[in-house]
Amino acid sequence: MDIIHHNIWVKGRVQGVWFRKFTKDEALRLGLKGFVKNESNGNVYIEVEGNKTDLFKFYEWLHSGSPKSEVKEVIYEKENIQGFKSFLISR
Image (cartoon, rainbow, N blue to C red; front, side):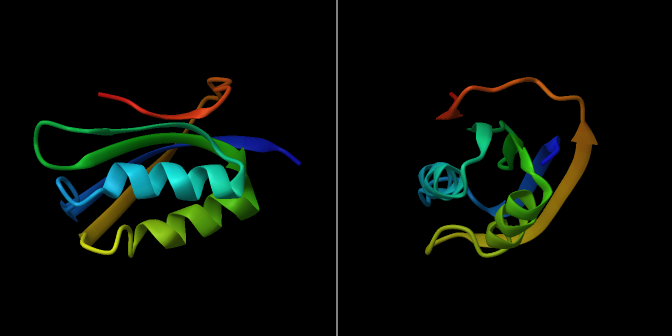
């Protein structure tokens, strides 16, 4: 399968609600690689790589996120492969 890369911005109440930890858990469950981090504007930024099917499942999961989050918008764009080896929480 072809690997693709997405840059993703998640907007809403997504900081201080364990969103990054749940995002990492879901990415690892799906076998995805990349990272997740908080942005200074209150959004969460994700770079993720994997096959199209698993990325679609991940993208759908992001719309609900962690149990205490309130996701208002998820935006993504395709980007060049970075060759991530794991999925990390970045600070």
